[in-house]
Image (tube, rainbow, N blue to C red; front, side, top):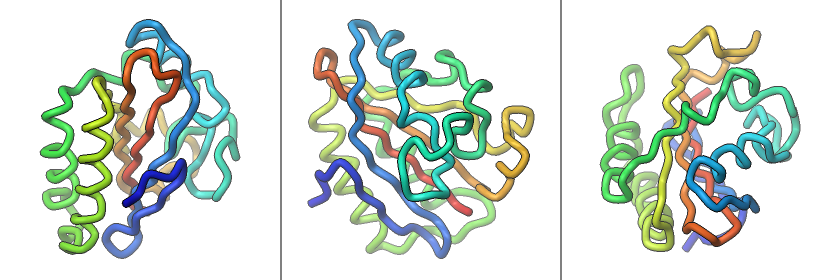
Length: 162
């Protein structure tokens, strides 16, 4: 069972799912997202192995291009169907293997059980105006964050394909 602060699940041939637990305080949903955008771990390219490896980037995007409003609430019940759609219906990729899906589904079910709030980043790799100069190397990028209000942490789930 994946419950570690850092987990990486291979998806497709060059895809991945990163799970990370990040300390993040906030009394309201907006404050939680705002504080996440400002934390050191948010500044990462997801290309290099260390969190906070590039404080000006977030995946394929310029960090400065991502606003609090780009993270929208998602009902806990809707998270798994959205992930399934990403993994099985994304254009340009074959569906993930059943073994890969089973591992991601298990992780997601455990996240959902211990969270009362989820958010999804609405920016996609189609938002080229938000991308940095080599953001195009990440062909697909999806992010969800989960939290239980008052817990002082969020759990980030990022699916990428490069």
